[in-house]
Length: 255
Ligand SMILES: C[S@@+](CC[C@H](N)C(=O)[O-])C[C@H]1O[C@@H](n2cnc3c(N)ncnc32)[C@H](O)[C@@H]1O
Image 1 (spheres, helix red, strand yellow):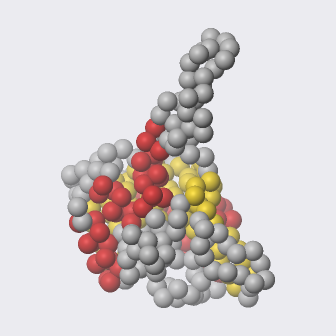
Image 2: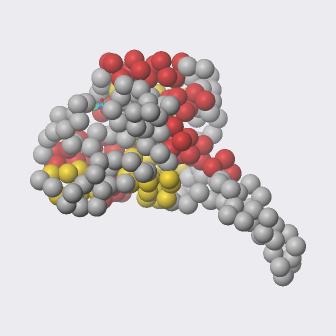
């Protein structure tokens, strides 16, 4: 794991594996944990027990991230008896309790999903971005998006006649429209709940530098690792299911 872009996939438990890692070793911990909603890859437990588990993993994430590094938790809803509880509302207190500072609650919006009959159909999930300390690394340039009016110029003042927006584009904001991974998506693997590479790519590009180590403790199909390989970041992926870990290995090895 010394070369930029080198990666490892550990088949094992997130918490147990994180406990073996040194403090301050990663620039970014980026993950999407199970939501405790009874997916094939998780065992549904009482919400309190689930949150206790997440508390321990988030505490470890805060420990293994370097000062100025970041922790990103991508989550949706916990649903019980028809009641919907957005998990970010539960994760933010756990992240703050672990000493992290919340920088953004990013809304990831997408067009497809379950059609609900007795509430609005859910068409977004969130990413909670928190940092270890205040001097955090944040590189806006690689994630800029096109200006709405790219040729607009200042019409008065010292900058009169000059481009009024940044020539590389504007800040993407905290609402990201990125298609989710459904059956005909080119990134689709056998994993039921991948997040898109475009989502991981924005976070890895802005929050890390080439050669940095990124850890995903609930790696699934290895999306985080695939993006890190492409962007010359090192990655350590942890995944409890051997079949998904194998998919992740294949993805990070792909050209
Ligand atoms: C929401 S999915 C992550 C999907 C991933 N972001 C991707 O793009 O493929 C959560 C993953 O956590 C794994 N998992 C569940 N419990 C785990 C544990 N205790 N330790 C490590 N992985 C676990 C599941 O098998 C599942 O693949």
